[in-house]
Length: 70
Image (tube, rainbow, N blue to C red; front, side, top):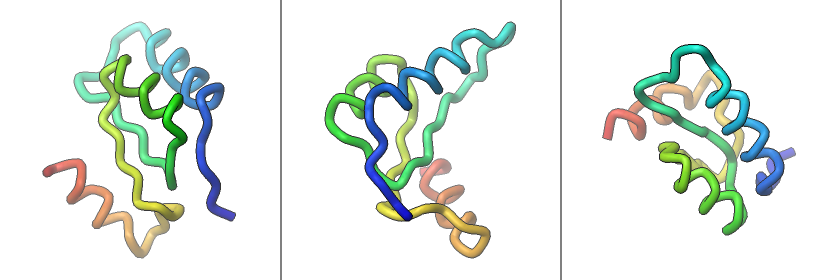
């Protein structure tokens, strides 16, 4: 089931990524959709957001990758 991701989930992922010994050059969240608080939290931490409005599957993984390249 697709659901809107809320702020506590985004904060958990942001903290996980920010605690890495080496930070990635590009921080990307691919989620079905975000609520406004979650979106602002991710943006404030400089994450690139991909919201395809559905769960990304093997069949549409290429489309998600194209959005990241854009």
